[in-house]
Amino acid sequence: MTSDNVTHVANVPKTAPFDGEDDVNTDLAFQENYAYVGNFGGFAIYDISDPTEPKAVSQVACPGQQNDVTIHGDLLILSIDEPRGGPECDSGSGDRSWEGLRIFDVADKASPRYVGAVQTDCGSHTHTMVPSEESLYVYVSSPGPEPESQTCAPPHELLQIVEVPLDSPESARIAAKPNLFPELGSSDYSSGCHDITAYPEKDLAAAACFGDGVLLDIADPVDPKVIQRISDKQNFQIWHSATFNNDATKVVFGDELGGGTQPTCDRNTPRTKGADAVYDLVDGQLQLRGYFKIPREQQGEENCVAHNGSLIPVPGKDIMVQSWYQGGVSIWDFTDSANPKEIGYFERGPFESGALAGSWSAYYYNGYIYSSDIQEGLDVLEIDDPLTDPAKQVKMDDFNVQTQKSY
Image 1 (tube, rainbow, N blue to C red):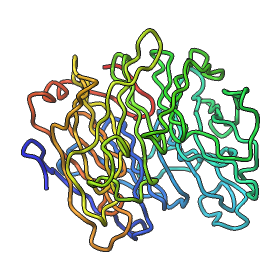
Image 2 (image 1 turned 30 degrees about the vertical axis):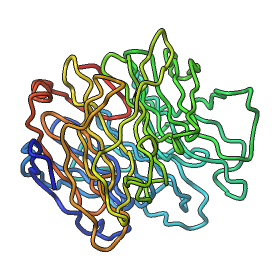
Image 3 (image 1 turned 60 degrees about the vertical axis):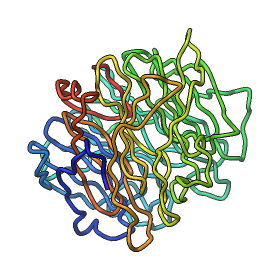
Image 4 (image 1 turned 120 degrees about the horizontal axis):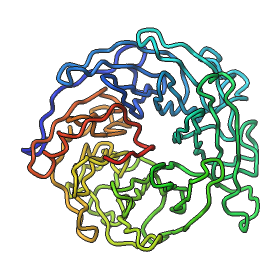
């Protein structure tokens, strides 16, 4: 099922060894004519020089949840949020004493090479790159603490910052663990962030920290400062992710009600829950304007909630594409912050086995929408609509959704 203005251009199914129901496809990153797709079993590289016929270039077996992926130059970084026996790909679950970031050299796309790793407290659920001339700073987001865990003892800060020297990535290390809210003190209870989106050109970052949204000044990338902390206890359960509009006058925060496993896109769930909240940034402060949720009711067996998305680069407009698990892929316009509306969509309907399924991430890159489907593999979509057509003139050399660049 799809709207008239969206075409399903291509699909590349998951292949062994990443083709089981537990081999969950996760996040996406792009560089030139390549797409990088994370999977609980490792990661894959696709040649997308012809988006209508993507071709698998390589798969690297390197198990670990989440295996969210970013790319910078020849360096690929994976987030591991699962205690493993060690940093190497073949370490197994073993004594479960390690989790964090893994680093690969992907200069040879057909044969990526493991470079090293950095252990981080409570692992890395997601990560965000903040590049500089000599180093790549990586903001690590992870939940915790877990008092009985070997890898996640209390206290646990909201943010850990890893420095990856570009000329010696094997020497990457933790550079800082800033205490963003010293007034809260240490706690044995859950802390940390789920996702952070940096906008280095604007010296800003927006952090979705489970129970709160946080606006940060990152002029000094290893010493971020809190500008504002907001909450919405009536509507938001899990502050999951954040997206700035192009001129950084708005932030969209998403609520992953039910953790992605529940059917929250139904008539029994309020339209303001499991949704997106649109905030205007006025005089340096976030002000709530409106909410968006897909208007199509999903069936009781379909896990559906707001998940990963990105801007569609339309000058003068604020338009996003976003994944909604089994709710599919939604394209929506929030130019009017108080009255956002859907303008296109793609969805498959219920996954037949009832397993966790649907679109994990949906991003726009150089004229096409790429969706990492948990069970079905890599989808390529095209939207043909007067509102989004100007985006086809915008060309990007690379794209990591948590590191925004202006267009």
